[in-house]
Amino acid sequence: MGLLEGKKALIFGVANDKSIAWAVAEAFRREGAEVALAYANEAVAKRVMPLAESIGVTLTLPCDVRSDDDLKATFAEIQKAWGGLDILVHSVAFANKEELKGSILNTTREGFNLALEISAYSLIAMAKEAAPLMQGRDGSIISMTYYGSTKVFPNYNVMGVAKAALEASVRYLAEGMGPDGVRVNAISAGPLRTLASAGVGGFTQIAGIVAGKAPLRRNISQEEVAGSAVYLASDLSRAVTGEVHFVDSGYNIIGL
Ligand code: NAD
Image 1 (cartoon, rainbow, N blue to C red):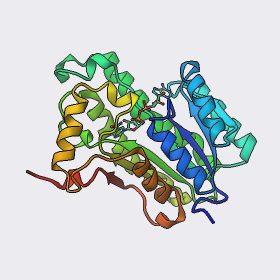
Image 2 (tube, rainbow, N blue to C red; image 1 turned 90 degrees about the horizontal axis):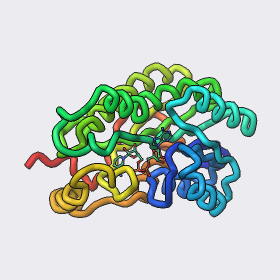
Image 3 (cartoon, helix red, strand yellow; image 1 turned 90 degrees about the vertical axis):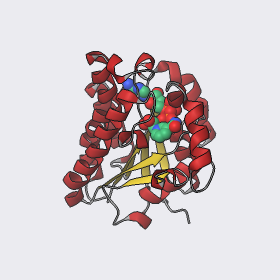
Image 4 (tube, helix red, strand yellow; image 1 turned 180 degrees about the vertical axis):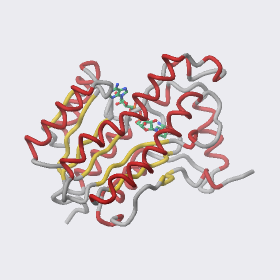
């Protein structure tokens, strides 16, 4: 029997087959979960639909996380289809490309607000909608973060600030939702080649340095992130909440 047998999971953030959210969706299906995919817009729909079909997912919902109406409609569909929700995966981030290179002093007010809204506030907005659906179901919420929240990485700039807000949100949500049995955790993944990371200046150099210095002396894969997501979604981690769990070949423990 799979680790997620009988569980219902809503996953935000599949854009293509390199998305971390896609590896998570595949792993959740393998472990027996029912899965729904929420995708950003019509532009990504043409890539998401065939992927969904390939793993037997029929519930695919358009949702721009900047819109409260979209979020409400998405969770209403989940309520209608499943009558509740066990697992929510937040694998969504965005910042303007020109603010992910050079100096943080180039950050605009609009760019800052956009990055924080899509990459951090959206977790709180989703949790708000998920809370009534997770009542009495020992729910698990998982978000994706990066070490740039805590340490300075070249070009990560406003996204580092957004990830710091995201990780603080994870802790506050964990406390706020804990009395209802809902757990909230984040996975801090090492660098992975995806659409999102392609927007960060000098990504290839960062990945090379991590591979050279991390205790495991290599980069990670989307599937390795998905493995930890299965653990955090399953009853194996039923006493774990408010954590930032590193899946980074151990890079974060290295000083010099
Ligand atoms: P990705 O580009 O495949 O995923 C990002 C997703 O965010 C996309 O599906 C995109 O459509 C979605 N998105 C952006 N704006 C949105 C909006 N307004 N409404 C709804 N969805 C929106 O890239 P990824 O690397 O899989 O990123 C997933 C998460 O993992 C992000 O939070 C990212 O910061 C995090 N992460 C990535 C890495 C890496 O190196 N790739 C490392 C650590 C953490």
